[in-house]
Length: 295
Image 1 (cartoon, helix red, strand yellow):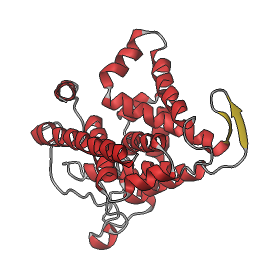
Image 2 (tube, one colour):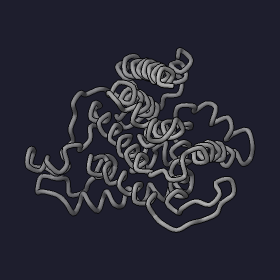
Image 3 (cartoon, helix red, strand yellow):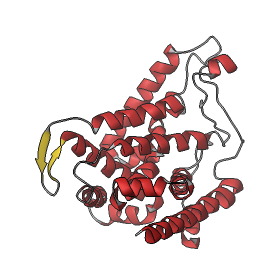
Image 4 (spheres, one colour):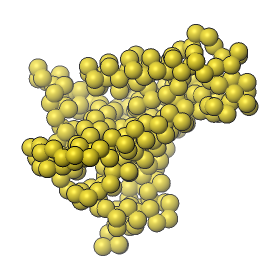
């Protein structure tokens, strides 16, 4: 735990007043594990319906999804970690955010909005992301692939999405190790992505064939929502109350700030990060204990 804290403190960079990717990721990990560990019946229901591989996949997916909303930022960790795919996604996020903010507005809204922390930093956007993922995993038809065998197109998209989210999780929580892989060989980026793909293959080949991937959509929506909520505790804020803010505040894109915490400041570094690390460890311990007792 001390190593993780030192790593976090030593890799800080300036931001635009929102929490850094590491803080978002460790908060998503801690909150997801806590919900599974302490909400009555969740562990039993999930494990009785599926298995531990689904359990692990949902945790990794929620943690990786916490970085998705920041694809509307040209300097986000998600964009850089996903390479050319990240550039395309970032362009799509920024364009749609700008279009929506200039189309859906009141007289009090900014006529020339910043796409970062705009449309994709709202709760409806989080639900939309989860819904899109769920719909992609329901596509019918079959495809035969190495390692995965004969699977539906929906399962194939679930595999791709899961591999990307695992990559975002590892690249953020294990930044030093992943960066060394990327720099050690000429094709380091491909090697790093391959590591994530292998983990995704292990998960996909160990879950029941008939699995409905609804949980992947829920994980994406949940992780994204944690990011938006987290930004509301910083000086940057986020329009989390959209569209109700049009009635409550007279602006669709009203920036909500619950607490004016400065990014990279002592509250984030010495309170939030250690607290979520402890929450993650305690929750994981309870989950393992519950699983052991339940066997």
